[in-house]
Length: 267
Ligand code: GLN
Image (tube, rainbow, N blue to C red; front, side, top):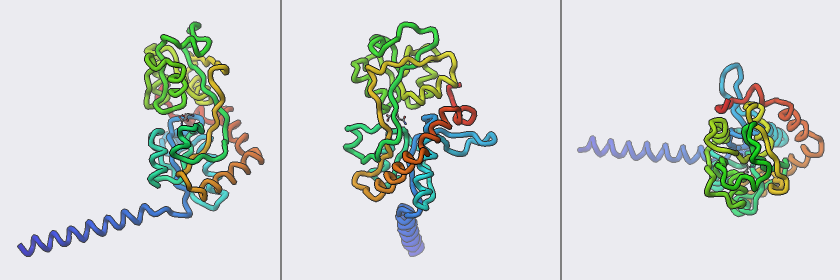
């Protein structure tokens, strides 16, 4: 009996110790910028292959956030998570900022604060090369549409009133695969990412409709009320916009920096 008691006491002490340790681990290291992203969105963020080893994150956003950290003498820790989880991870303090080609929307502003915009994008449609039915957004009526869950592409398609024939996938590559396999007629997704998918899948083409799809601005998200991180991020973005760093990084990827490196399930 004594032995059992001792065992229980020891166990409780161990549990308590490990709980406090876990608690300590959660404390934000002020010298580290803990970043959340969803590395499924080339050329902004993707998992790159280096010497055949899939081990690092690359892309326009990754380079931008590394510069933000560098400007402030901080290290970067990248956490790869589902796009939909980023706002939750900010709210519960798991990450201190999120960079993921995230469009600044009024709805998202209810749960997070956004930096100054750093990139302008828009939605486009991707169809198979032999498709001549879809020339403008309203031609998608009655067609099988694929979007990525939680992306602004989904919101746009729903706003157009085509939710009934729309399917939402977890990843852009899954939506593209659906199109390649002729299981859907069109994918709606952000322009730069569409360009990347077209390069990887030359049988597809992009259809634009600037009257239907307004331009969108990407921002870095922080926890609501975290003015310290926001000011730090904004100061770096301002500097990088002025000195041409953001343009240079974007141009590098537009010229194909993501082509050979990105892993792409849809190839
Ligand atoms: N810009 C789109 C959005 O904010 C897609 C972002 C992403 O896939 N990472 O919803």
